[in-house]
Length: 338
Image 1 (cartoon, rainbow, N blue to C red):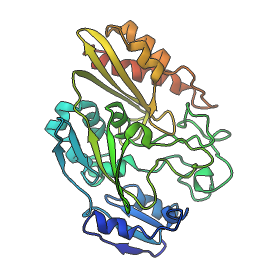
Image 2: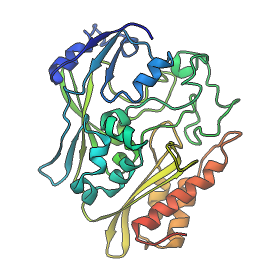
Image 3: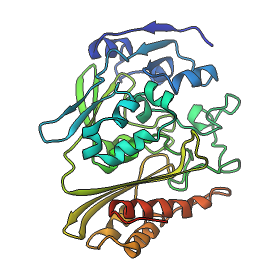
Image 4: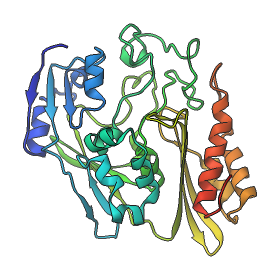
């Protein structure tokens, strides 16, 4: 492993300062590769051991960032980036208000990982694509000139987005965060800014193919802020290749705002199908004004996968994703599935 400097800031201001100075046009393009943040270290340490990440400086933000879950004035919750995933999964108030988020937290990794990993770390983990994780493949995400997935092993890659990089977003918590309409607090040398979770994650265009979000190299992600949920029903359904520790093949979060027994509006977000948490607007439109029943759920699931473009080995994901969306809707309505 390459030698590196280690900085242990005590607060946000010190942590931002440790990220390095900015030039006239902001941080240089390679700052994110040279200076990296570490909290739980579940992702970064593995990448360093595999020579995928070789920073010059590690900034330990475990003691600099908030590790609490507190109520907001509007009845929502403010979750610090340094909150352990296990603490979120066990938080009674979060479970009462945002069961889909807590469900997702409880399914992350193993008990050991959940007790070490943080909310901020899960939202910002790098792609799990085996080409990206193998030092011998210099793919687009690592500065190369091609994505190896279309002509290679693409069983778990994207069915939406059309490239040029076909990774899937790996975060379990980002999907329900988008579905609940969360906001993210970021802080940098020029102060703080608040970004909608749905606008935070970025598609891998050639101009931004090496990044996954709008976080600048001199900024910190500090909080996940959830609005009061209101009169909604919640559903979250995951499909995994195996029952032991694994990332979901496909999963879906569904939030339904109700008017009596009728769906007034919906938010449907899928995970592991695209390079970002994938909001299925067509499914949301299919649900509006309808009752929650098997026929409504099936129609919305079909709409959610309209436009999917699987590759040579991941066509099965289309049907699996339909099932995940359908069952998340039925779960939200309290309807048991087989």
